[in-house]
View 1 (cartoon, rainbow, N blue to C red):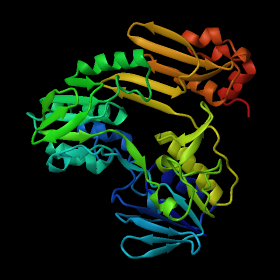
View 2 (view 1 turned 90 degrees about the vertical axis):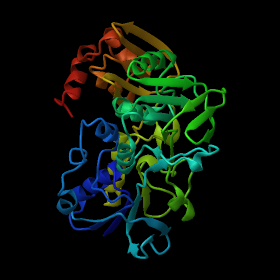
View 3 (view 1 turned 90 degrees about the horizontal axis):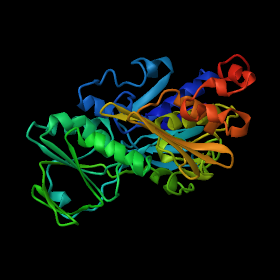
View 4 (view 1 turned 180 degrees about the vertical axis):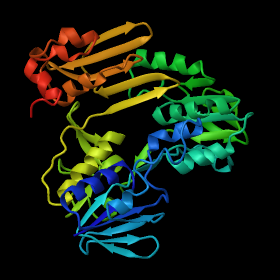
Amino acid sequence: MKYVIIGNSAAAVGAVEAIRTRDQDGLITVVAKEPHHVYSRPLISYLLRGETDGERMKYRPDDFYIKNGVHALLGESACAIDPDKKEVALKSGGKLLYDKLLVAAGSQPFVPPVQGAAKVKRKFTFLSLDDARALQQALFPEARVLILGAGLIGLKCAEGIADKAASVTVVDLADRVLPSILDERGSEIMRRHIEAQNVDFRLSDSIASLTGGTALLKSGEVIPFDILVFAVGVHPNTDLVRAAGGAVNRGVVTDTRCCTTLPDVYAAGDCAESHDITTGTDRVLALWPNAYMQGECAGLNMAGGDRIFDRAMPMNAIDFFGLHIITAGSCEGESCVFEQDGSYKRLVIRDGKLVGYILIGAVERAGIYTALIRDRTPLNSIDFELIKEKPQLMAFSKMDRLRKLGGLD
């Protein structure tokens, strides 16, 4: 059996490890544009802060490829898929035949068309290890850094460089920070916390044009800068599947087995859609754990297994300047809100089930809330009043406690 995997991040690792649980002998080839050993992308801001390095960022040990019998073509790009010939064309001119193919091609930064951007010499994106290293080399103590985007990418970039630049200014058209994962109160808490760390915000505004080392905002304000970072968002890499005739919406369309509409072609990770159990919609969930689980599901099925992935949901566990956030699920429903001693909690309930939460500060035992969402547990079957303020296993029946602690199958 010939397996080809396009991509070399969490989904690819999940697939490789899953394939090897069922097939020890099949040929696995990984094709990846980046030349690096598989690394943990969420750690690139910590690289800038000097809290990690290239070695510690590795997602698997140095012998990962050899140990799993993987032929790794790193620094190589796939440029076309021929589903009839079951062939992947490479940028170098070579071709790879496959029996099963996984597209785990990830995403790429979205760079908005801003007037004058082409003439800005020090401009960067912030998604990959190479992005982080390039920005690291450009920084200097007197630098004035302008970041376009107050979402997860932009704020992790701001955290990474705040103590290495004279000033950091973040501009976003949204009226609050982290609008994709936080409500208004949560955003206010985080904005105030981050503002105390040498970071300024210009919200409900955007860059109209760039001239030399100045940015003209649509509000009329002019902001001087030395370094510009685009951190507006990402585009799923779907072109290979689309060009081959596969169904694509915002991401590659997959079923619960991670199969695309092309025969023997699977998709996983940031380029693929999955079914969000908290909203009932199919969408891209660009999350590290989700990517691994999708890749694992795809790998098992590629090797002849029968696995479904039907428990996807948006979830983020992250911190900014020491203040921790965990969010999961949907914010649509009835809310229970608690705020105490600098911590914030919002639990969202719909149809008698917990469908989402936001935790800021006190994030201990968040996994109990996550399990309630993922297992779709009816709240009338537990003592929900007991765990509204402090999640604890005593709210569950003795039988359920045993299951969650691994005492029962």
